[in-house]
Length: 347
Image: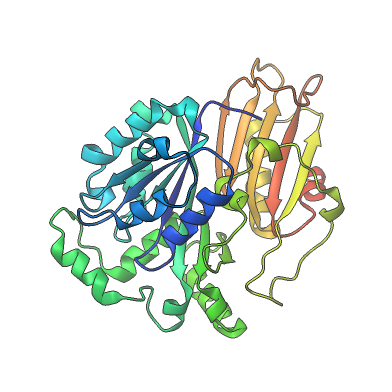
């Protein structure tokens, strides 16, 4: 299920929440050709140096695949720094499978997301998802930030910040914008503490956004980045009807893959409505695939993370299954089994 638009994944969260640790894991384990935009404060790119040493690409490609923006808060320098950086990366779009943007802890996600819809780049990319990291240990102790002093020093010393957003307000903005929230340092929390942290995140953010525990940045890359080409046609039907109890071990997450393939007429708006409704009930993390609609010459490419639905008509060059008239071919990643049966029963 190939497409020409590049997926852009935004990773946000405060200083110390674990963004760079997560990013190093993704770059090392995803087996995808990824480019990275790193937004830091100050002239010394510490995060960039950490990423360059994780061995995710040949040494002669590192400087082209990692772009460091050290001139302050990304949402305040969108036009001056971010858009030129994205345009430069997109000139090499045939050499990468996706782009990851790691924002500084003080960046507002919404201006960045709006920038990804600018005419110069919106036809070449789609928003693969916004991932917000939350320091679970800090939040369990009453603050979304573990080192509030360092955050305040950043705000005070950086003249490029155009917005003076209170920490708690910025935290809510990060949560509301998220398609997926990761609770980092969850190994330091008891089951009760984790439950309280999760409730607080739901209270301040979007109640239907999936919330997952994470420790030391380790998580199945497909949950964050989406299915890579080798995974697109995988169907683990033996797991379809197995509901997992995730409360028994809050530091372990089972992700279930299901293959949804049907051959019957389907309406785009109805398809979106059904899929979005299934997200909270089955804790759907991602959906990727195609829909062939009667009367359309090209298949509808579908990408979902949580309730964020992206679609566009585009041809595909691979030799995977195609219906004789109309139908769908989707792969879902979820925390609960039964998505296929629930989808089928919705028609």
